[in-house]
Every structure is written in C-alpha cells, then in structure tokens.
Amino acid sequence: MTFSIHGLPVARGIAIGRAVLVGSSRVDVAHYFIQPGQIDAEIDRVRVGRNAVVDELQRLQHAMPKDAPPELTALLDVHLMLLEDETLTTGVKHWITDRLYNAEWALTTQLEIIARQFDEMEDEYLRERKADLEQVVERILRYMKGAVSPVALPVPVRRKAGQHLSPDENLTVPLVLIAHDLSPADMLQFKQSVFAGFVTDVGGKTSHTAIVARSLDIPAVVGARSASQLVRQDDWVIIDGDAGVVVIDPSAIILAEYGFKQRQGELERERLARLRHTPALTLDGQKVELLANIEMPEDAVGAVHAGAVGVGLFRSEFLFMGRQGKLPDEEEQYQAYRRAVEGMQGLPVTIRTVDIGADKPLDKGQKEDHYLNPALGLRAIRWSLADPAMFLTQLRAILRAAVHGPVNLLVPMLAHGSEIRQTLALLEAARAELNQRSVVYGPLRLGAMIEIPAAALTLPLFLKYFDFLSVGTNDLIQYTLAIDRADESVAHLYDPLHPAVLRLLSDTIQACLAQGKGVSVCGEMAGDVAMTRLLLGLGLRSFSMHPSQILAVKQEVLRADTSRLARWAQQVRDAEDPTQAMAEPLAARTSKESGWDSGLGPLSTH
Ligand code: PEP
Ligand code: MG
Image 1 (cartoon, helix red, strand yellow):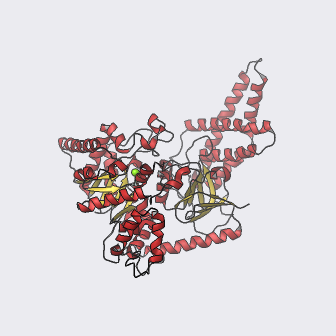
Image 2 (cartoon, helix red, strand yellow):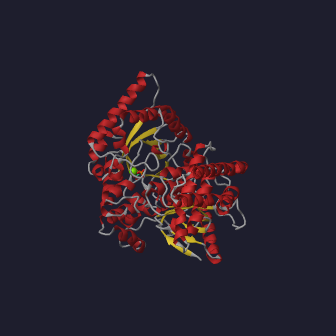
Image 3 (cartoon, helix red, strand yellow):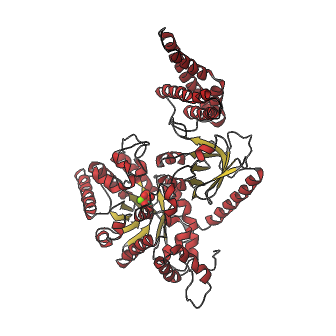
C-alpha cells in the first residue's frame, strides 16, 4: 500500500530505490559493500561467529548445576533454537550474496526483519523473544569483532539513480538510505558509496548531516520523524528532495510520475552545465565570486569542475572525526591541506580551523558534559583555544600548506576580543616554531567567521584584526533566533529572513564594504537560489556554497541587475515581514512609476 511521509527537503532531485535501513537496530555496526569475490569469506565469518556462540551456549548448558532454575535452562534452549533458525541464516546469506552487504550489516538487517515479525505476533511470550534474538545476534557480532575483518570501504558496485528499474535486478538496483539519525562523520563515509538518496527521522535543514548530504548532491529529506519505523528493509521508496516527501511502496502511476520528474531534473542539470565556463557577471556588469564549500581535500576536484573560483570554506573538522580520539598530526594535516590547495590549481583555498562540537562530535556516541548543551558549549574556536597544542599543530600545518598556493585562514565562532588576540598570538607562535625548525611556510590572509550576534554587533573589532569576514549564516541564524539548527521540532522557526538576521547580515556586508575589506557568506543561505537576489541587493559579491549549487546560483546572478536590486533589498531588510516583502516586487516588476523592480533580467522565469 502506497503511503507518504513528510519531512524537510535538504538536497534537490528525485531518487527512486530500495530502502536500506541502517543503525536502526540497537547494535551499532559498520556498513559497507563487499566485492563479489568476498561473498564466501563474509558468509564464513558469520558462520564462524555463529558456531562459536553455539559452542559457548552448549558448554554453558553442560556446566549447568542440577539445581539451576528451570527458566535458565529454557532460556539457553531458546537461544540455541534461535541460532539454528533458518530464517536467520538464509536471510543473512541473502543480504551478503544478493546485496553485497558486509557480514555485520547483513546480520543486523536480518535481525531487524525478524524483530519486526516478533513485534507483530499476538502471543506475548513469543513477542518477548525479540529480546533473546537481539542478545544472540549481539553475541555473534561480538565474536566477529574479534576476527579480522576486511577494510571498511564502500565499493561502488551499484548503478546510479535515474536509470530504469526492474524489480528483478539485484546487484544493479539503486539503493536509498533510511536512518533514524546519521552523524556528519557517517555521512562522510557514505560520500564514497552508492546511495541514490537518503532520509533521516531527525535533523534540521542546516544540521551538519544535512549539509554533508547536500554535498553528496543526492536527493535527501531530513526530519521525517518516523521514517525509520515505517519503512521496511528493501521497500521501494521515492525521495522527493525538492518537496521533502518520501513515498513508500509507490504504485505504478506514482512511479511513472516521479520517473518523469526525475528526467526533467536531469535535463535541467544538463542545461545548467552549459554555464560552467560563463563568467558570473550580473546584467549591470558586477563581478560575483562563486566559491565552493568542501569537507575533504578530494572535494577540490569537484569544486573546480563545478566552476568554483576558489574554496570559500574548507570544513577542516572532517579530518578530525571518527578517529577514536587520535587526532591527525601536523604532517597528516599538512598533506591534506596541500592536496586541497594543489587540487584548486592556483585558486584560493579558505581553510577554516577545526569546528568540533555541537552536532559534530569527534566520535560517534561521544557524550561529554559540554555536549549537554552542545550548540552553546565548547565548540569551534573555544575548543581550539582550550587545547593550544592541538591548535598550534593545525596552524603550523595550514601555514606550511600555504607554500603551495593562495591560502586564507578562517576562524569560526569568535565572539570575544580576547579570543581574537589569543588566536593571533598562537598563529605567531606557530610561525615562530616553524622558523625554529627551519620549515618553510607561506603567507595567509586572515578571516573571521561572523556566526554569533555578538560578533556582528562589534564589527570594528573584527575589522581591526582581520583581512576579511565570512558570514556563517547557519550559526548566525541559530544564535540570533535561539533555534537549535539540528532540531527538526523548531525547524519552522529557523528563518533566514527574520528582520534581526537580515539586519546583522546587512550591517556586516556594509561595514566590510565601507573599509574595503572582503566579505562573503558561506552558510547554506549562499547556495539558496531564492536568496541570491536579496544577497546581491544587500551588496554581497562573494558567495560560498556546495559545488552542486554553484551553477544554479550563477544562473540567478546572470539574470540579476544589482543597480535595481539595492533599493528593493533595503526595503526587504527593513520590512516588518521580509518574506512578504520578498514576494512583492514580483507584482511590481513591470511597474514603471515605482522606478524599481526585482532586478530580474529578461531571462527570468520567475
Ligand atoms: C555556518 O555556520 O553558516 C557555517 C558555514 O559553518 P558550519 O555550518 O560548519 O557551522
Ligand atoms: Mg558555523
């Protein structure tokens, strides 16, 4: 039966595929695809693990004292029976052989399927056997953990979304990922894999998980509440990343309709691709800088390919995540930054110092006291200043990478003059250390992120010390409106067009322009085509976004006339209801007497 779930759209397009549920079982395991040649070895790993558990339980059974409570013996019998169960073994074999799941993933997938069957049982005693099954599987997994496992790298063996589907196809069927929650580090792992789309129960539009999803350039919906409960393993699912809708078990008519939409989207992309080499100039000849946000050095290739004229935000923290606390040393970081710089082929790279904390823990499941109130806790520059040795290591690595091309250093979450001064002192110390070691380093342009209202309200302080400012609207909105950006329950209040946000943004742009300092926006707002004209009207000429959004924003730039947008943008900024004011020029566009319009050129389809 077809049904749909609504969530928040985060990445455009339509994906159609079979559901892969991850992390929904209480057992947390690695998920990766194996090569066909590894199938037998993977099945063997499960078999060895299972046999070990059988042996262990049988030993326990034999060693059981005569006067042991009968429930205990019965429990061991049940566990042994579950281990012998065909449904478990054949199911696991199916996931490994037909879907190329690694052994642990296959086991937890089958666990979920059987667990659901238990949930649906009328008999209470049988329903409760689910807990036994979970225990048994956990035991097998523990045994398997001790055994050597292959390198956990996803292998691209599946076809991309958008190709014709046939339910008979196993290895080539597109897969969509459904999870309760995914950490940004999880998402990064999926970056090298094959999913055609993804859905999570939780998360806001600018949560870091959503941001990484956007960088994958696959349709995605977050905040879909109960999706991971309602969707079953292997269900056919449509993800509409434009509307934020997830359709489960679609009928043939619905499939055809979305298939059509999918092809339309592809045609639109092909059309936009023609703009790749077109300079980003407005109708009135204003040059606009379109930069890329990247998470890993390897993303630089995609950024150049998308026509970015530099990297406006390299979120360096992704180098620090998922390493069980072992942080990258100077050499490793230097090599990573160098790869990004060289990948940009002479174009500037803005490396942001590590922004760990809030919804970006170093390791999954990490819970420390300051994570109790994560967004307001020890995050970003606060975290760096709390560990000067770690910070100095990063600064030295960035300084060294600057030998290989133009590098800007960007500091996140600054609010206090003392933080600025400490940061600059540490930068000086990093230079001194390199001098002492006779290691060469390059020049850096220094930038501060404006992400906290306190920073936006004390701009002269920032302009005194920095060469440029970059507005992190994701956090600026979060902190101005007191809205946790990762919390879908307040997502409706997360408003880039709130007058307070627009005021802080506009003041920052104007203050930089007045002093001839560089200013850009690197939050998600910069990649939102609905915001391009407004930002241009407010005076912004430098936008940093995910590479996948560059061409669509460029199209808006090419259609804009900034000489006409400035007055309109001021009216929007000063309006009681800017959202309403944004819509008004559409009606007034042809109004000659008003003397201004939306600034849209003749190409506009708005
Ligand atoms: C921002 O806050 O807008 C920003 C770009 O930084 P991040 O999303 O990584 O917090
Ligand atoms: Mg931020």
